[in-house]
Length: 42
Image (cartoon, rainbow, N blue to C red):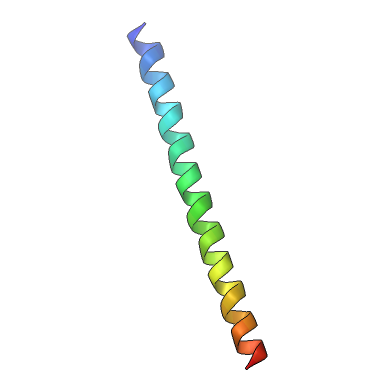
């Protein structure tokens, strides 16, 4: 029982880290696209 709860918690932790990583990756990609557009239009 305790092992199942621990496993569930660790999987939620992994999903949480993946979500944060994806958010940061998308944020960085958007910043790069904005910077490239700004540089291109200059």
